[in-house]
Amino acid sequence: MSNGTTSDNPAVQRAETSTRDKGILILLSTLLGSFGVDRFYRGQIGLGILKLLTAGGCGIWALIDSIIYMVGALPSDSDGKWIVDGKTRDKVRSGISNFSRKDKGVLILLSTLLGFFGVDRFYRGQIGLGILKLLTVGGFGIWVLIDSIVYMVADLPMDSDGMPIADRKTLALLGSH
Image 1 (cartoon, helix red, strand yellow):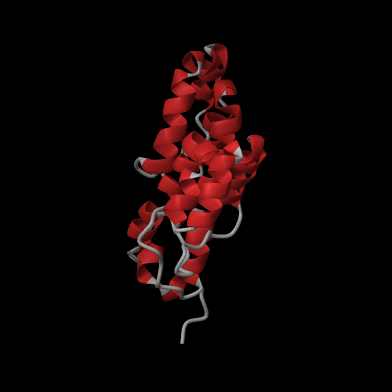
Image 2: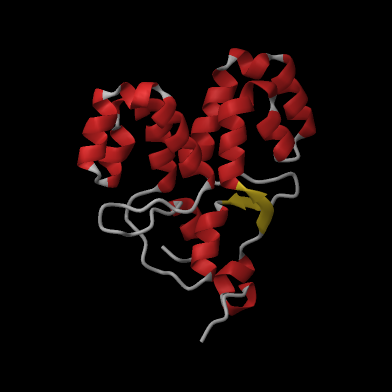
């Protein structure tokens, strides 16, 4: 029986993961990306300063970085270690192996860009809440902000079948997909 340590899972041992968290990186990029805070968090000081001086490339660089962090390849820190979703990693380490087929990165992207229309709730299979969020225009924006932040840093959200929605890239890196 596994006690949940890193040494119990050879895939986790092989994966060079950073102490930084992908959810925090996405949050920083989404809220403060125009100031280069996400690049400073990754340890990329030069790029952070450049992003700060250009206001995140007039917002375009900041937007692209945010989308890449959500659904693109796993980012790495200045030491070349992968920045993974900490909540997904913790669930894998605790022995959970059944995850939703949905992707947490896609969920965050849908919530951030289309949350006013309830698209994230429809994606989770929560049709009633999706309709309510649509009719209230994302709770006048407040619900959108709260959902987006919760998806980024709180425990893994669940789909309509009660399965945790994990970061698929983190699962693939840790060999648990």
